[in-house]
Amino acid sequence: MNIETAEVQEILDSRGMPTVEVTLGTRVHTITASVPSGKSTGSKEALEKRDADGRGVSDVCRLLREEIFPVLLSREFTDQRALDTFLIELDGTKNKARLGANGMLAVSIAFAKLSAKEAGVPLWQHIAESETFTPSYPRLYMNVMNGGAHADFRLPFQEYIVVVGGKPREAYDRAKEVFKTLGDVIRAAVGEVPMGDEGGYSPQFSMLERPFEILNELIHGEDEMFLAIDAAATEFSEQGNYKMLGTTYTRAELVDTYLALIEKFSLRSIEDPFAEDDTEGFSNLLSCSPKDLIVVGDDLTVTNSEVLKEMISMHAGNALIVKPNQIGTLTEVYDTVRLAHTAGWKTIVSHRSGETEDSFIADLAVGVGAYGLKAGAPSQRVRAVKYERLLAIEQERTS
Ligand code: 2PG
Ligand code: MG
Image (cartoon, protein in one colour):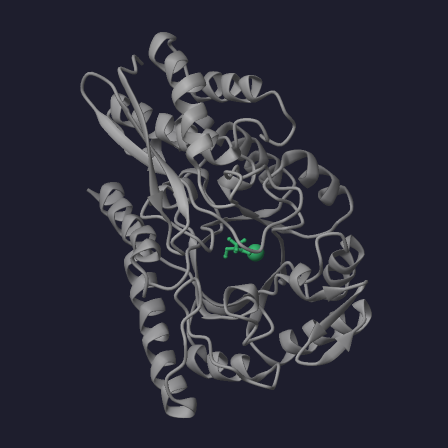
């Protein structure tokens, strides 16, 4: 593939923070790719490079223009792995600290999109075929109530999620219906409430169980629907204990709290139930819980195959969140997904709390055959475009 044009520009994400958008072109096609940004980040994530003010990305843009683009325009890369290997070697650090995982990922995704265009196949199909994954539709993990660091801790857990299986169109309609009814229920109970970073409702309740009671009522008796949370527990851990709603929990007490919630409500999937360094909490929960509980690592695993390998050997979970910007290149994402699937772990492809209108993760989720796609609430365009891309993929696959 002959890349003839390469440009970068600064755009704003859904929180108004600058991020990078890369445009690549061949003689025939031009595509763009942009990257999101997290707030509750794992300490082992690849580095998101910012200027000295902690906000800007002008340094990242400069490095792209001076070091990466000239090579893209002059050298031909045979495939994604060749490009990503070049990026990793040019960066030369363990965590992408020199060039920045944000700039590198924008190029990596742009290259994948352009390759698909040149091959004349949909992006999800290009991913599946070039990496030999079996494509499938992910379950929708729609985050409908926001708490934790995404909503000033108005609720103790970061995300209260409705999971819906089935074909995308039907699943999306059902999830949107739950989200709409939830709004009516919350307004009737406590009036208008703020929205969190991912577009979900952020009421303030003093009882841990209240959000579960409300959501359970809404999905009660429905097929292929259950509840999930992202506790994002690193955010409320304090010296080996956990603090929620003014109460301190030991690790063992928090395990019991989760088990009680699972017992009482249709809660089947728990992400980051313990802090990222509390592997014992994760493995304790997994060993005590019913077989069908999905224990998901995010800060724990950071889409990094080396970290994941260790967590697999420690039985610290049975699923992981896949966020491309936690690692910085697509080849590394694919390697992590392959390792997970080989070990029998489920994968849930995910957005970040600061998002752009790039819908790449929908193609990624279908292409690798992920169990789930976590993309927030459709009240924000940056979230809705991911679900809408999934609907477009459904059309592509049936026509
Ligand atoms: C998470 C994410 C996305 P952030 O913790 O899973 O929902 O949040 O992007 O802030 O890390
Ligand atoms: Mg998370």
